[in-house]
Amino acid sequence: MKSIKNMRTLAIAASLALLTSSALAQSDYPSRPLTFQIPQAVGGSTDLLARTIGQKLGEALGKSVIMDNKAGANGIIGTELVAKAAPDGYMLLVGGTGTMAINPGLYPKIPYDPVKNFTPVGLFGYSTSVLVVHPSFPAKTIADVISMAKAKPGDIKYASAGIGSSPHLSAEMFKLMAGVNLLHVPYKGSTPGVTATIAGETDMMFTGVASAVGSIKTGRLRALSITGPRRSPALPGVPTASESGLPGFEVDFWIGLFAPAGTPRAIVTRLNTEINKILLSEDIKERFAVNGVEAIPGTPEHFGEILAKDLDRWAKAVKAGNIKGE
Image (tube, rainbow, N blue to C red; front, side, top):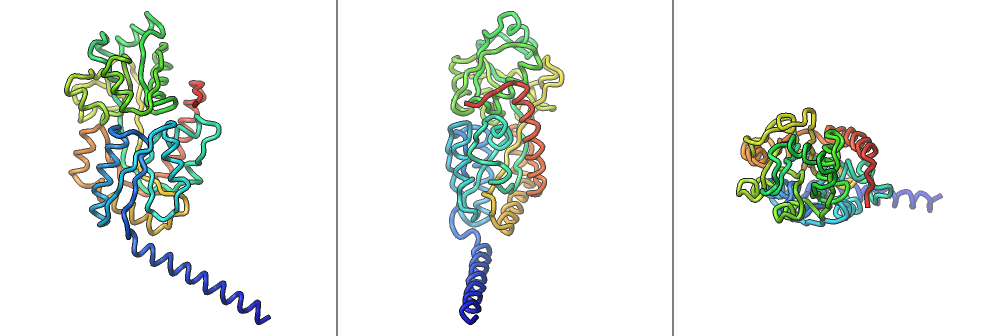
């Protein structure tokens, strides 16, 4: 009996020590630099937003936020790293619609579960896309693209950030709604896809405003339309798809921060609070707007609800388009 009692006493002491250690670790958070794992290439929309928020978050927390880009496999490589990371709030994922809501319906054996392996921390905002073409491409509107595609099915080449990526599914939705056939040319990320379109390797691409606005303003790309319901403050002269010849075509995407499942609530709350403060600042609202992003502060729970709805929405879209991940 004494032995059992001693064992129980030791177990209770160990548990209390663990809880005390955990509480101390959380109260001391962060005690070292954080890492934002970005599963896309440098220069894309997700990367630009991550760096903007990361800099401000580092200033608020008093610790630097390191940016680690791990592009490849349609965002799976970088996302999986965070899914398997320690739930201590130091390795965080900058995830978007593509990696968290589209990939699960696209790949039959994805190495992470966006719901079971992650804890939503905070939504950064929604981004709209823009349809860009090489300057020599003759189309001036979406209506022109549709006419050209119908005249020569499969002749127009469009770039994407990879099979199943947001740019790919945007183009597939466009094809379905317009009733046309285009030739898909996948690249390893939005930046390589944009670069290919600038070089004339492809004719067009649906991509985030942030990753193309600079090239549009310098004339290396020409913008035909915005895919969101409203014109972008970053490109006020570019019409929406509805204005440009395809009524009802609207595609937008979100970007936000995730932590590994099991991350202490106190840490999630701290990060969410700081992120919301950042998003409410006029400086960030203006910087986001320039890149075609609407800053949207909110709770982790609301972010989780958005993820759940989009998992269902995009699974249906992938199935309807008969799109298979590679």
